[in-house]
Amino acid sequence: MSNCSIKCPHCTAVQSVSQEMMGQTIRCGSCENLIQIPGVSTGSSEGAVSSDVLFCYKCGQRNTATSVSCLQCGVELKHAAQADSIEDTIISRVVPYKNTQALAAYYCAVFALIPCVGIILGYVALVLGILGLKYAKAHPEAHGKVHAWIGVILGGLCGIGYTLLILIPVVLALLA
Image (cartoon, rainbow, N blue to C red; front, side):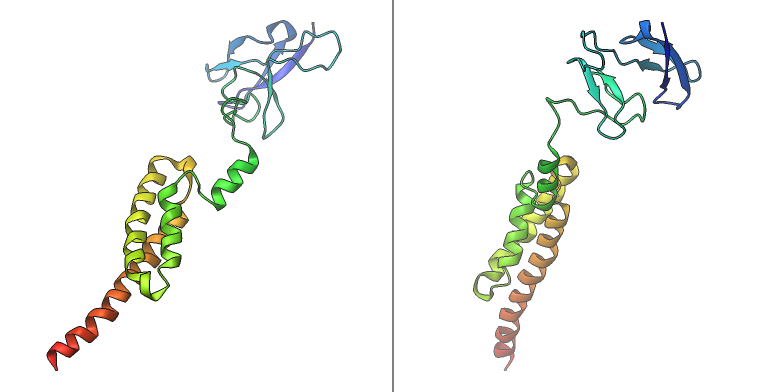
């Protein structure tokens, strides 16, 4: 049987592996870490891909369906059951719908620019922004830090600014 070369994901040393070892786990000769060797298709047509094969989204390396990281580049593999689509990831970065506190803080801060309701929405945006930052820290996949910061800063400025606009004339009238 012919041999193929596998790069260790831990130390990047190249290992020569025979075809009969495909689908098994071996120990790297350099770093002694375990390496999962991808299996090959047993289908009748040459080059067919079986259901137990997972290709790396970064480098295209063929891996077994049970592999946690790519054998070629070492990146963490996302399996179909847990993978988010690329569109979903892009949308959740632009509109962090998984972090509702940050998203609500952003909109409250924007609407806090309206003078009559700005004082209330400013403080609501400030509180929701802080909650959104805490949530984003605990759940980084939810995103929303920028929206939360906009809620904290703009909401805080609007809330404090409108409060001062109300209090300064009242204090000046009392002093006069």
